[in-house]
Length: 289
View 1 (tube, rainbow, N blue to C red):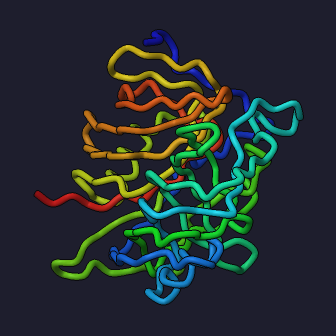
View 2 (spheres, rainbow, N blue to C red):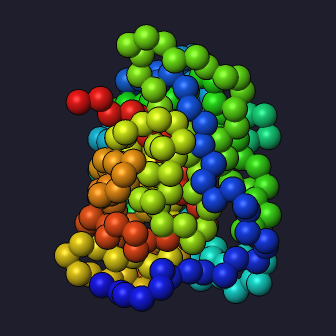
């Protein structure tokens, strides 16, 4: 486990003064099946739009994808970016899906997803990475569970700090709390902010004493796990497997991440020691014991 000052990665643009962007509303939860023959983008977008969800997250498992295209994290050779992606991979056979997390929102006015997943390849074995939304097709039905908001959009917009266009929560309208209703928030965390502490900040902002992390994806500047492992890779693709956030500290995040060499690392992150690399896109739901 590393010690001393929190790791950081210099970004090409000026730091965004708003290190944690979040907006809250009433949670809409749905379950559905990704339909074979559709791109993964369309298979997720159609039921999310039908439910009126403007921004949210989806957890998927089972079934298979094929044709399938994905990229891995990579070091950047371009000064315009602090980290980047590999060339795309295209397995020849359909790949069984172990688990995937998906941010749902819009890009250029059209429904769009951002998916990090774990799957099995016949040639390379267990793999993890960033699924290409328009090149990847559902081969066998995939189970999905989703959480989202109708009054908050996740919208892909330019991020001057990183030089990427990134999913960012955008408030469409204020939503008054519904008595007995479930409250949640879409969250974006900027680079070099510890992810757990950023989520705790969002909880305090919205009056959540505790919150459960639903779905959610991002990247880290290396990683420190509670069992003492340290991952030095500054570029990664990551999905949150489980997360419980306490506004006063002591939050837990269990993740699976892939590094630039393709190695998968799973475990619980050390609180306060894991800064975002490019971004973190998260959905939290208020936890009421």
